[in-house]
Length: 603
View 1 (cartoon, rainbow, N blue to C red):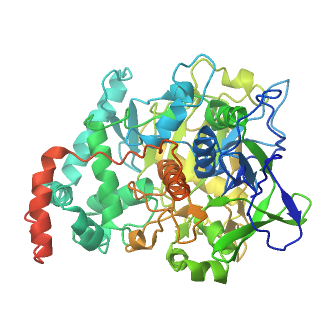
View 2: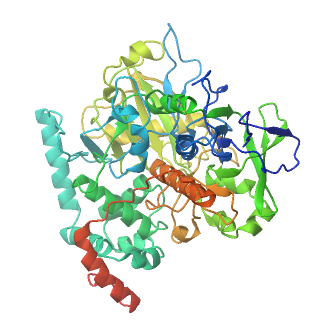
View 3: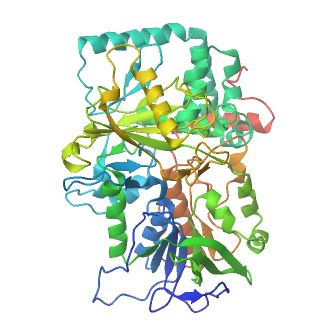
């Protein structure tokens, strides 16, 4: 949000608009990073730098903003990142205040556990380009792949599933674990009627063979619940194939979720499991807290490229005049308002924060911005439980299918190989962190009969713990013991719980029907304004780090096109489309344009 020629940044005090004419040389990135002071870049000090390619203000320091800064800096632009709170945004990890003792680091916490599946291509490409000591493939080498997952059922055996991928070695099973696995498979097979399984497979084939026009039209208007005919089916069908898929994959309600979005992601994950068009295994996580394994090395690399950071700066308005953005009005850490000027601006804030900064003049210049007011966000927030003993859980993700608050979790210490958790973090007694995502905040729980938003922070922790125990302690030796619970940490972005007006600084874009048509492109009609964020229209059509990364690449490409730059364009890799289905999709395109249903759609 600031830009200069020789100094790489110009602050203009006050709220007056400042034109960017003649201010060549600075890119500015502002958004949500890590709460710490960031000074000027020191990499390359004493060396003469080539003249910068132009000034760009990228507003947002999350994955989208850092990606834009990365791509711009590599192409000769001078970049400054302005961040309201913490570099990395929702992707960052953070310290639990007051938890360190004996020279150890604070306990690691996070907004939610990181999940980087093999369907992602753009984000892994960026990770490979971030140096990390000892890793020839950069921070990408810090990804590890759990070999299994579990569908935890309340009052029934849990379904333990291997994740197919070459090189995965199944964890050894005890005789009792083998007994329970077979019981779970048979219980699921018996309780999920064969005709319902066949029907769901048929619906999947309808989507797989649907042309893009039908997906963008008919299926974007159809809720997943309706597409799968869930209202007519058994409780298990609804729980596993309708509600479970939408709440735990796309974090929205099956009754509202667009079939286009759910089906597209379901297709991608199935193809990933089959090894088709994948960057890697279907499930990948980091081998350390996110900042240690990824964000901090990324910021260090960007500094080496000449990027500068200003943390604690909040964007208030993008000032529009004479057909362009003339300044970004920001409040500094001291509360002083300033106008920052640059040649170009990339708005990389989350949509719920970005649209507050788009005034009437800017919205009039590009009416598509107003459509972003229709985009909806919801709560999906993490809580961590710190344990004094390793829980005997599956070594991978756990989906608590029957939990009222749609819980998913992972015990992290096993995946942080070579790291003595108790020796590195906390007070020396904590040996593991059970990181839990809470996807449903508006349904009553089992302890207090209240929604998560109606509970206090302490009640949320007790309720989540109770729901975890209901899912994991119901069919054998208890996996979670109250005596092993050391402490817990709930995302600080959540405030006002238990009051009439709870707030969440880090909501997640959801995907009800029609959302696709309200998502804006990266290039706006204002010649020096570009958009990056997981709400921008990209191929993956889901609020993800991959979407944020891809949208930033598209924004940079649009900027390069408008400036006539000869710099190479960013590669933007779409989701894999199996070529063998293309003839069936072409046939469906003809039927769709004639007003006919898909050839496999028998209702």
